Length: 195
Image 1 (tube, helix red, strand yellow):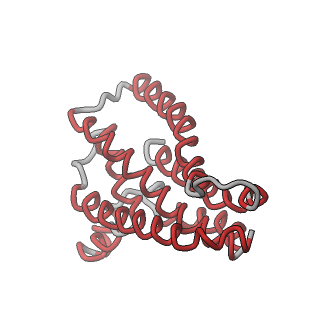
Image 2: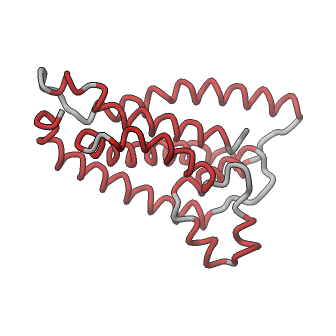
Image 3: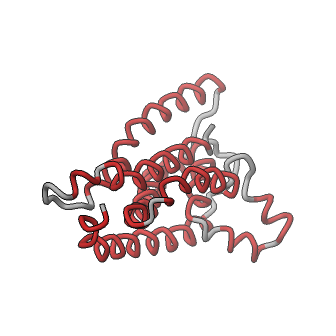
């Protein structure tokens, strides 16, 4: 459940962010407003669901007698990384979905495939044990790997903080976020034409 919590937020925010411009296409032609609000709104609105699920996780941890250690202080930066991941990829895909309508349908399948690629049902240490350190570091490029493993380390304390995965994931997250932002801004002037 600890690994599923950030993944569920990421997946739902990503799907809703991708579909945001297509769902509001009639609005794009009528009123001018900063278009970037549309894909970022689901990213922040899904935080309410995340908080509710997090409260359930806290109740489960108390019930099972699991208490986080000092690593809990790293939870806020991990949540910020999680939000930046959803925002960056959401900006990319929402700008693509307004022009290529099939993206809207492909994102639901892509989200399921991405879940099996993320360490939700298995720890990333299996990659390290089976394929070695190089594959483990390459696996860290997938930005949700560091976040999910960081959540496990912060809340459960069953493993040390995976700093190498978090560092690599932070770089890829920032790259996705800024490139998504600039791609969205570049495509923004064409939204009303193709909506």
